[in-house]
Length: 192
Image (tube, rainbow, N blue to C red; front, side, top):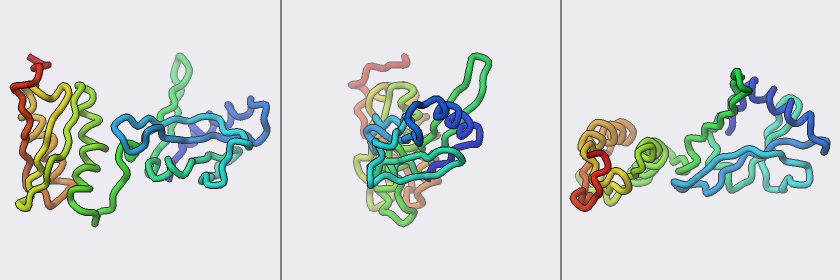
């Protein structure tokens, strides 16, 4: 489920050693799981905060607890810690936090939506945009709708063909191409 690097484990052991409550562990969680607003976090988890439905992952010197709602969205998550001159940086990568991972044999529309949410939209969000699936046609065309900073953007054709189409064709073999149905003339042309 979650991989915690040796450096991160050492960091957690140092932090937990300073806690007054013995047997305090850590809690790894996702707020708004399965949405584009999903946020991952780590907090202290004293013994009285452990729920019967939590998943416990045991590490050398501490345990990590995951609530049952967050668990499916933390599949393949990684926590790392790197020391820097000004202190350290804890990183938590959870590729399935925004979209629950789907099986390889799931319907094509589910797999398309998964890759849009887990890979493509996080990149588009860097520019204030997003894309959603409107329809998946019988002929294998993923019909997409852009929004936010992507609507009216002069680079949308490049993003569509060189980024999104290539990714979807590679990840979902049933996809033969993509089509944009966005009314870009109504956008604000954010990059002109």
